[in-house]
Every structure is written in C-alpha cells, then in structure tokens.
Amino acid sequence: MIPDTDQIRRILIIDDEPANVRVLSISLQSDGYEVLTADSGEAGIACFVAETPDIVLTDIKMPGIDGIQVLKEIRGRTDDAEVIIITGHGDIDNAIEALQYGASDFINKPIRDEALAVALHRAKEKLALKRQVEAHTDELELEVRRATRELRRQANFQSKLIGSSNDGIVATNADFAIVLFNPGAERIFGWDASLVVGQRKGNEFYPSEIDDVFQSDLRRHETRKELPWRETEIIARDGECIPVRFSATLLY
Image (cartoon, rainbow, N blue to C red):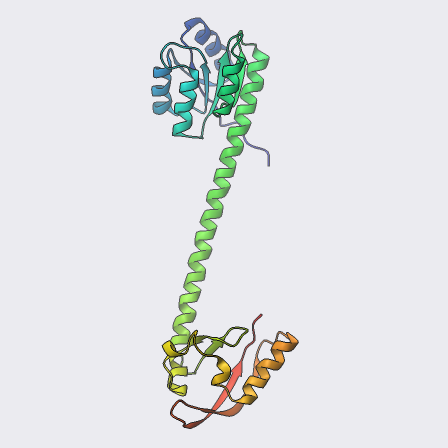
C-alpha cells in the first residue's frame, strides 16, 4: 500500500525568530506548500486549532510555551497531524523527549534544505498512511454494520417464520439439549417452551426411531442436508398418542 502524500500541503511554522520564519516560509512556498506562521507557542496553538494544518514545524526553545508544550497540546487534541521539532546545538535530550511525546522527527539549526525535505517526506508518508488506515477502518466498520443489520434482518425473519409455522419445530445441540421449541411444537407435544428450552433433551420427546437416526448420524459425522420425511407417533404430555410426519436437518 503506497500512501498518497499529494494532498498534504498545509504547514504551520512556529518560531519566535522572524528571520527563521521568513526563510522557511519562502523555501516551503516555493515547493508548493501553503504556509501558516506563528511567532510564539501560544499563537501557534491558536493557529493550529483554527486552521488544522497537516504538519507543524516548531522551534523547541521559545519564551512562554515552548516546542515540547506545543507538541503535547497538539497530541492531546489529535493524531491527525505530524509535528517536526526544530532544535539547536546541544538540544539532543530535548529532541529525544519530543520523539517520546510523538514528534514525527527533529531537524537541527541551521536548517538545510535536504534535511528539511527528508523530514517532511517522512511526516507526509506517516500522515498519509495513518489516514489510509483510518479510511480503511471506517470502510470495514461500515461493512460490519451492514452485515450485522442483514444478519439481524435474516434472524428476525427466520424467528418470525419459525414462530408462525403450524409445524412443530424443535432444535437441539449436539448433546440433544433443546434450544428451540416453537409454538407449533408446544401445540403438538403439550409442553410450554419455557419448561423445555435449556431444561430438557430432545430424546425425552422423540420416539426411539427418531432418536436412533440422530444418534447414528452424529456418530458418523455425516453431513446430510435433510433426513427424509417419515411417519411415526409421539406421546404428548397428557399421554395422547399423536401420529406425525417428521423430517430433520443435521447441521455441523
């Protein structure tokens, strides 16, 4: 996945030295960047909040709010921007601290065009990749929501279909514990679902020939789409012998 960096064009320069701001502005504007400037940490934060630039170049040592504090403030607000720290000689400890707080890179004064270009390229690649991942995550989340809605719709439809069926529908797990007992089954067997589901096993209700079919197929682990219809008799709760036709589907 190659990140697209072409749309990352807005840069905020924060430095209390006007000469540095002017030189950097001219250089970056000549490279096609839209440049915003601020002469203090306080002004830089205000500009960042108002303009939401893609990349921030900030001097590490400034009166009042310094570059580390600017970095912390930006990171506290968003990860959707990269911060490059401008350091002087002897500021290596501060530069390492800045990296620990999430700075994209640091460059030393006097700033060389090559070093600036490399730092900007790294920052743009990181930002573009991050945005690609976020966009992809959003797409995945949307697909999951769509799939979830469809599954819920299908489940609701199946639940209504089972509930409204005149046929008795009984489902069990591999241990034959009953997990579904629809109103049709309640009418046929004479048992309320609340007394059956999760409390009783299917072979307590089925005649032996039905139970034998299930046991045999489970032992062989054969996946059969549907067991053929056959006739048998069941004993209802009140002792009545009821002739029925039954079929079953084994799912693995």
